[in-house]
Image: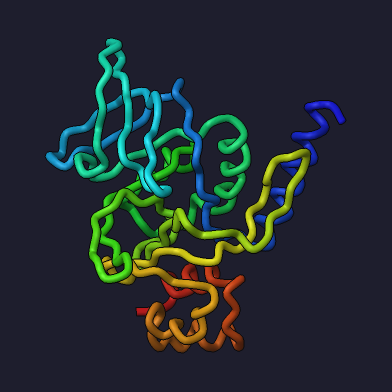
Length: 236
């Protein structure tokens, strides 16, 4: 199969998936472009436009960014120095994830996030307080539902394992259901929500919401993204 036919098929499959599940969580991104500008807002309110040279991770979490400004000055930044940031996806990641926003951009409910940047393939990270076992830690977390996150924020769990995925030509084009996420309800400390505990933790996340209960007769983990979207749209 030549390159043009491959991407045509890929685009068709992505559109088919998204037509069924328009309000999906974003697929987590691990690689970012060093050639496109990254936008960082620091804890003191200052803003930086830099090129990301490398990311150092420890147990899946960002520990350090190596960046370079337009003048060629290089520096190292710790995540605790950064309030939030937009990092540009690299190559194939960007192509795949842009498709999720074809039907989403008119329905955003979180006006604090730059819609144009995310729709252009940027991945949004922010500092969040997270409950990790018995500790509360402030970590740089990747937000997976930027377009419908006004009430419930869902962050990528770097330790999560996907239960399924669809692959074409060696690429993962549509992720399966992660087995866990970190969830912040009404900007409270994010906690780990696991697939195996979803039914018993459902009320902890959503409380009692008649529209949500009426629409979904059964509680299925595979519909978690839809539950979050409907809650943000229709629940107090």
